[in-house]
Image: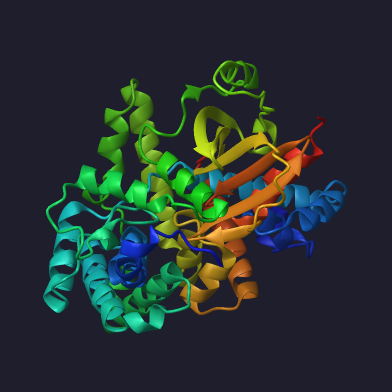
Length: 189
Length: 263
């Protein structure tokens, strides 16, 4: 596989080390890691704890990123961290999320829309949709979030969740089915 | 629920393929085969409608970026573990943090570093594929994407007149899911080329077009560089290079739309 290269003489050393550096390989996926932690933990503080631990772990075991898809590998670490955290604090997992203050979407939507009523409606819908996703069983939720919000391929999801691709496909199917049903039940278009 | 299909689970074994197509996981041949099946399978048609509804619900949601304070705390924690860690780039597929080599020093401002990284990403005499990916990355910088912004091929095509020494074919594939966003001029392979900008969902596809020089085939063809897929073909005497971070299957699909289009 070809690579983007810098001018030969000066660049080689810096880029060789740079290409494999933590900054270059792992940090670009920080948002993805945060997002997954956020959806798995359904609580912003717990999500940050998971993210912190996962990033330190990624740094510690940076060698394990060699030759694998770095985003999938990082998401896998986040997921494992989240699962052990959920197992430790079973209570947290069952607390319903989507407290109003938790959803920055509302303010954003109002500010960027001419019509406040429509914006309010949309932010309410957005809250409902998020609550519906949050209510999905965790293995369906993570699969759906990785696909729809992170736009991971099936292969990446399979790697991140350590699940066969066939299972990824059926989980994705079930997640969408449940989401569509629940949305219809709540009158969401 | 009122929908028997969704409450009883897949009533046709091919619904997971319908889903896979929606997710960009099928190649053109598989998609074509599915199309034939779906045309006569009401279960798959209903499944597709349902999947599109589920997707529409989610696609309207804004992406949640890491809040600045969280990012700062994570970076502080990482630097305690490993002091030389540079700041995290924001949701970019590449970073210029690696530029902080000994030769460059640490005092460069972000703008300066960005400008430098663009130069360094352009190879001196290297592989055309690398140059194309580098150009695509450069174009994704704010304000660089299009020189002429129009979804109308009849606006984009004349725009190139007088700016370039050939008439590039311009097509809009909005109906197929690849709307034209605009065009710009670029310089590749030691000549000015036309770059057409398309969108696929949230992704940008750059299509570079210029006349075949007869200099023989370029070294690298379809490949993947740093997460960007590249597809190359020639058609009607023109070189075509499509580059994007969309899935390979979608980029192939896009290329096939072009190849099938009447000259």
